Amino acid sequence: MRILVVDDEADLLDAVARGLRREGYAVDTADGGAEAIEKATFIPYDLICLDLTMPGIDGLEVCSTLRADPPGEVPPRILMLTARDTVEDRIRGLDVGADDYLVKPFAFDELSARIRSLLRRDPGRSGAVLEVGDVVLDTARHRASRGERDLDLTAKEFALLRYFMTRPGDVVSQEVLLDHVWDEHADPFTNTVRVTVGTLRRKLSLEGEEPLLETVVGSGYRLVDEPVDR
Amino acid sequence: MNRTGVGLAGRFPDRFGSLRTRLALLYSIVLFALAAVMVGGIYLGLSRALSEQPTSHLARFEQLAQEGSADQASLSVDQQEDRPWLVIFEEEVNRRALERLRAYSFTALAGVFLGSLAVGWYVAGLVLRPISRISAVAREITATDLSRRIELGGSSDELRDLADTFDEMLDRLDEAFEGQRRFVQEASHELRNPLAVLRTNLDVVMADPEAGPEDFRAAGRVSLRAAERMSALVDDLLLYAHHERPDSRREPIDVGAVVGETVEDFAAAASRSGVVLDHDRIDGLEVVGDAVALRRAVANLLSNAIRVSAGGGTVRVSVGRDEEMVWASVIDHGPGIAVGDVDRVFQRFWRGDRASAREAGRSGLGLAIVRQIAEGHGGRSTVRSVEGEGATFTLWLPRYVDS
Image (tube, rainbow over all chains, first blue to last red):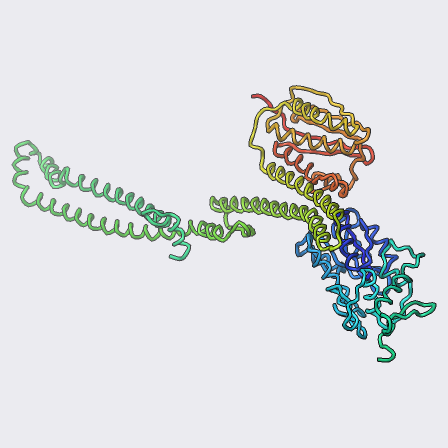
């Protein structure tokens, strides 16, 4: 899942981005409305955390611009962060197309719960606990297991597995993975995707276990949703 | 009596009861006294006129005079002879007439008393009705809901005037409360931003099991910055709240001296920023007010000017006067103010450059405080600016004329 965090308050921006990265999201940042619109136009974010009050182009304007001309096939979910909390402010925010509204200062756990809930609402992305075959992924507790065995995954591997588990059986290309699981700091010319997929594959299937993550030559990778022989 | 009447009586805890009762009583007593004086006067005058010179004597005297025998002896003899029947009869008639008049007068007075009591009660009720309406509305109004008005209407008399005055006072109170509410709201929004920085940073670093000492140190640094911002904001909020009411101290102040001293205070800060402070001092410009507040206003203007001129600019401070006002100007050659922002610079929490203002721990209240102080002294604050060339902030204060 790739998230854009927008806030003109650098200290807050850094902390939110850091916290979300630790939860396994790919996080980009923007310190103003113009940069946010520019990034969101080129990158199909799954979710945008948007500060309402910013100098110049404010959150409302960013929100209505993105809603008027949605980038990508699935428009990003928008979560407004703001210090203003009157009813009129909330209504205005929701009216221009924000999906949710969180008042500053917030507990980081609440922010991450709301992000999980917003991402669940998308078609093709199901509940807090994902299951494919005997692999279980608990997005709230940040735990993954296969059968009885706990999988000890890094944040990036976890995010990668989550992405595959929301679309089991689909072939996912390296470019799509780079867009949704990696952030803007990833170098598209390195083999980071290949390496991470490799370690995830090894952790998913120990020696003698059914391989789950297949390479589809020339197009990408696929999570096997129905093991060939049970 | 209805409920409001009882309420009114409760408001006048007097042995005469309610205002209405008192008015009715007063009215009927005065009317009764007037009527009594009038009736009594008529009665007394009549009784005196009747007893002074009995008509029968006069009639007999005239008769004797016509007969030519009106000498003293005959008259007195006749008098003696006439007395028993004529005088007694006349006296009896007079006595009865007066008795009848007395009885009628007492009945009429009793009637006047009762009638005036009833009329007085009715008229007092009519006059006091708007007052009970005013007090009913006043009772309904609480400090949190000042939207109710009396709206008495009707002819423009003293009570209408009272009700209108009351409504105008409510308008002013409503406005003041609304302003206060907005201020508290804006202030809490402003405090929420640094609070959010503080909380999120601590939240994230505390929840990270792999966070090392360097991470905690970084979070500590950010928290410290946020705390500094909050305390600067709170200081300015208090200052702003303090200057909300007009300054109570009123003493003659030499504006030239106050400005001169403030410029000296800023000399060190200016040279640190590489700014030349240019100041021409004129003495004898007197205003009345609070010297500490004026110094604060000039200091706020100066620190703004030095900040925007940092790195080799010149800030010019001058004072002067016209017919009615004394002025103090701070002129910088910084970036100036965008045309659309000129009207907003004196508003609370307006910052030309939000991000850098935050880093410098500026609250966005400096110019709002300047305006408050100027207005508290009966003056005003103005700005003239050409974008890219600089800005001139001026404080106008009414001149002090020694009478």
